[in-house]
Length: 201
Length: 171
Image (tube, rainbow over all chains, first blue to last red; front, top):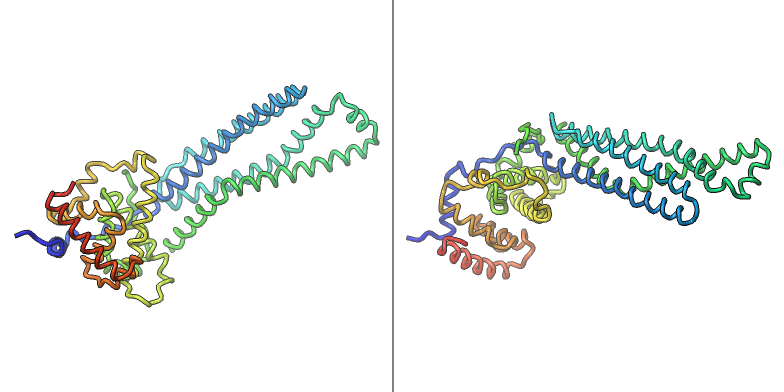
């Protein structure tokens, strides 16, 4: 006689083996991998966006008659691109070895390290690069002549003021773009680490 | 998938006392929404995690089992939708034939019934699972967010569809 779905259901589950719960294993394994993959993809895309920007700089300044300045900016941007690529290689080298928790913690630590590194780099690098850029832009202009004609201590003060402003602006722009591009992912990473910590306690 | 099988402490007492007795419910639901053993284990773990995370939100207005049904269904539906967006993400997510075989029920009739249930829409799957678990129309409606009248009509239609599928041995 044909069995009803209710009978199939009830009798099928009489066999206790069908209802053995799987072990709770490495709960965050896949979630961690997905999140880190997303972070790496974003980092890669973020870095790749430097290439068109450097091309635009060299072409744009070249057309405006500031070829040296354009090339200078391109060299700076491409240096940043290769530096980022080296940093990305560091991220790629991490594997889940002991647990997802350690894996995520390690990533978090690296990202914090990156942040500190870039804040220092931009805080110092942007004023240095910026002042050189200003020099290249104004070097043969009357602006430069009149600037050099003012008292030396005033020149120092002006350069110091510009440097500090550029430094603050560089760090601010970095923090802002990092928040916009990576903010939600880092927040998710922190939440996941907190949940895992909670589960482990 | 070469998972490092490390047991995680899901607040062991809570798991043993509040989730494990209801594991059959979770198992039955997770199996209806997955095609491989790997996915099934992932779904099961995710459901347990979500139950644990949302335990503070349980106010006792419904039965604990109803709460578990609701979370299990929500989690399975969410994962199903998310996973369908991530098709082809990585090699590890490819469903292996071995895993599909492991995922079979030893009872052939039950296996066929599940295969038929998987042919239903996401919400119909939820409704029929609850019906088979002898939940009242009111409770089914409450869990799935439909009206009790609609639930009755829907169940009749689903049972007809399942019968057709089983008579034709699915497809």
